Amino acid sequence: MDRKMVNFIKEQYPPGTRIRLNSMEDPYAPIAPGTEGVVDFVDDIGTIHMKWNNGRSLGIVPGEDSFSVLPPKLTTLKLYMPLTAELYERSEYGDLESESTELDGRALRSCQDQIMAELVKSRMPEETERGLMYWYGKADSINTKVHSAVFTVEERDRQLWGVAECRVAGELSAAELDTLKKYITGQAADGWGEHFEQCEILVDGGSELYVHLWNSDDWSIQTEQECFTPKLAEGLPELCFSTLPGTGALICIKRGESGYYPSDWSTDDSAHNRELADYNNERLGVTSAQEKAMKVGSMFGWSVPGADPSYYEQPQGGMTFG
Image (cartoon, helix red, strand yellow):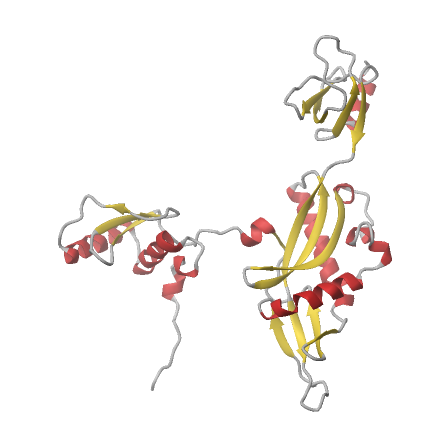
């Protein structure tokens, strides 16, 4: 097979292409008709090497073996963005107040059904198949891989979020994901979202709610992993020493691990153990705030507010007297 044809086959069947075998001419180790798999690579003589669903890897030869290309499987990619809204309430006389109340995602949880209904109502007939991607207008890999994208809402972590729900074929590269995020941001801010934020949503006996998918203050668009995967609190040491509240025993705490390790230096004197903890922490450069955060993290998880040393370093508020 000449080089031009081999290159053509490589372009037609890139890695990840889904294939169903119709028949195979190999008399020694044929793959059963109907078996499906994905292309691994095309070699320099034009053989398509496969990863079959049954675990085999026998290649297929274009022109000899018969096969069909299947449409790529679609997976759901969700991009999360914080919601804000303005609520115009009715007065006791039934008139709309001239001043609005600003609401964030936590306050909007009770309005999820009404907001979702308005999002669906605002979709245009042209968007039936591809949603926001109907307006994308570029012949690039994003247009090929992202089959559709629609705005929805979802409650997570006791907050209502705006969500761009995308149906994607294959994997997006980091650059492709960044391009998609920029496109969705533009739609949330100036395109689709600009129209939506002018739609009145009736709540609570006739009060009017106006929801913003985008805002200029503290706004971001993130994948589910970026938005919700717990992160270790910043500013924590690798390990620290402390004492158990009940017994006063000397213990060692390791960042990111649950529980603690008993220290071989522990004594029966709780006051002396406290001195040992302070001495060793000072040598390690561990502050009192870091020790407190490490204790909380080891007991209650490393993503809780108390596992962040800044929680103890900032003023806690309350009344002051002159």
